[in-house]
Amino acid sequence: MEPVTAELITAAHFIKETTGEKIQLIVVAKDCDQLVKQLEPAGADEVYAVETKRDCIFQDDALSSVITDMIRKIEPSSVLIPATPMGRSIFSRVASKLGCGLTADCTEVLTAKREDGTFYIKQNKPSFGENVFVTIETKPGIYPQMMTIRQGVYTAYEGETDAVKVTYLENIEIPASKLEVVEVVPARNDTNSILASETVVVGGRGAEEEEDFALLKAFAEKLDAAIGGTRPLADSGKIPFQNQIGQTGFTIRPRICISIGVSGAIQHTEGIKDTKLFVAINTDENAAIFNVADYGIVGDMKELLEAYLS
Image 1 (cartoon, helix red, strand yellow):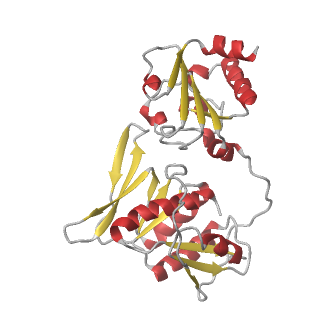
Image 2 (tube, rainbow, N blue to C red):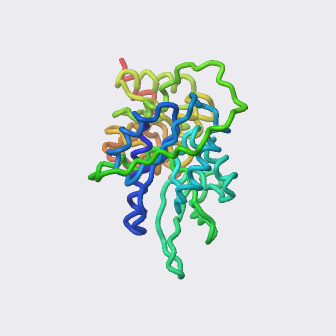
Image 3 (cartoon, one colour):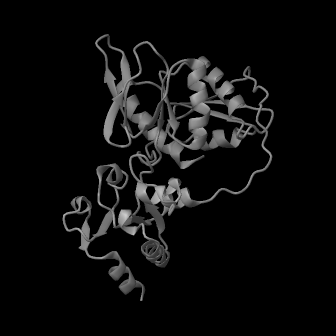
C-alpha cells in the first residue's frame, strides 16, 4: 500500500465527520488478497475488490474500464484519488466514462451543505500558474464528485479502526488492453526521498548558477539530506520536476528544512509550512522567506557553504 492511501483516508474522515458517509476503498489487482489485508486496518469502513486474471499494471485503458464499473456499482458521492501519474492517468479516463468531471491537484477538501440539505465538496487548489487559489464545486446533481489530491497535504491516518466489510465484486471482467508492457525497470527514488527524508535542503533562484548548485548539492550530501527546489530550479533542469516543492509540486513535512536562495513566495512556502525546524539563508534581509522561517541567516550562500564544507 502506498503511503498516499493513508493520507486520503485522513481526508475522507474529515468528510465523514460532516456527512456520516462510509469510507470505501477499491482494489484492482491480479493477486489482491495481500492488498486487501493491508487495507483492512487502514481506517476505512468497507473494501471493494476485483481480482483480475492477469497482471494489468500500466494498462490504464483496461483498468479505467474496471474501475468505472466498480464505481457504478458502489455509487459513492465523492471519489478521492492520489495525484500520482497513475492516479491522474486512470481516473481522467474514469471521469470521462462517467461524464462527471474531475478536479486535479487539490490541496484541501472541505464539506459544505446546500439549501436543499445535500452535501458537496469544496475542492480547493492553486490555479493560473500558482497565482490564485480557487475553490471548485461539482454541479448539483452530478455524481460522483471526483478529485485528485496532492501527496503530502494530509498526514497519514492514525485513528482507531473498526471491523471492515470486504466485498469481492465477481461480475466485473477486465477487458483486453491496447497497451503492452515491453519492459519494467526500477524507478528513480528522487520523489520518495523528498517525501520520506527527515532533512531536506531546498534551493531557489539564488542557487541556479552551476557553481552555487554544486555547493548546495555537496552541502546536502554532507547532511545526508534530500534535495528539493522551487520552480526555477526545476525549469532549469537542476532538479527533476518530481522534486519541486510548493503548490504545483509536493508538500513535505521533514524534521529539518534548510532553504538556500529562496525568496519565499507563498506558492512555494505552502509546500513547507509544516516543517518542524525551518532555517532560511538569503542575502536579502527583507526576503519573505524570513517571515516563515524559525531561524534566518542573512548572508551569501557561497561564503556560508564554502566555510561549512571546508
